[in-house]
Amino acid sequence: MSIEKIRESLDGLAALASRVAAEQADAIAAIADRYETTLRAGGTLFFAGNGGSAADAQHVATEYVVRYQTTRPAMRAIALTTDTSLLTACANDMGFDEVFARQVEALAEPGDLLVLHSTSGESPNVIRAAQSAKARGVGVVALLGKTGGHLKELADVALVVPADDTARIQELHLAIEHVICDLVEDRLRG
Image 1 (cartoon, rainbow, N blue to C red):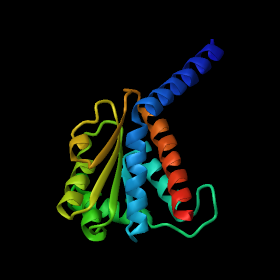
Image 2 (spheres, rainbow, N blue to C red):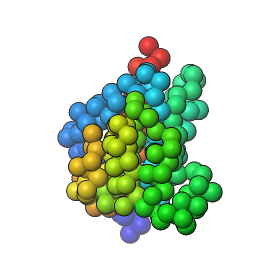
Image 3 (cartoon, one colour):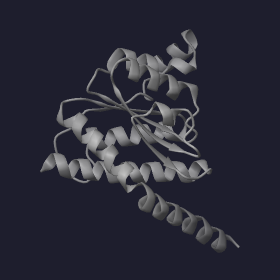
């Protein structure tokens, strides 16, 4: 019974990954182009999300700052999910909906890129972050799930993993971010 469940789960993930590769390679390439353009011009990639997507934001920012596949100069990337004092102060004083938007207001400038991970595209704090970025002339990329939600309409480039299972969406978001990071490293190294 457990062997069957293991195979079913991993086969389902593989099928979803194949579908995303077939249907969304152009969107992935467009996101990689945005990251490359931002970094090449000296801009910063800002990553944010909630829960598992927050963990993905931190993971991905680290790949750019420290390294992914190759040792190379650090790239400018920040996860907006890591400063507990800032997050709790903002949530307490202004409301949790503002925790990312406030950081975008303080840190992001035109030429930077805000990358939002959301399985629903409906979390008020990522929507507010996108609105704050747009108001400041900062580009917005969104990695989403389900239907993409309201955030899909606010993003300059959106990739929607066509699934309802939060775990599968997050697993694909991280795999896609790794593919993008690999592409960006190759392009900026050359």
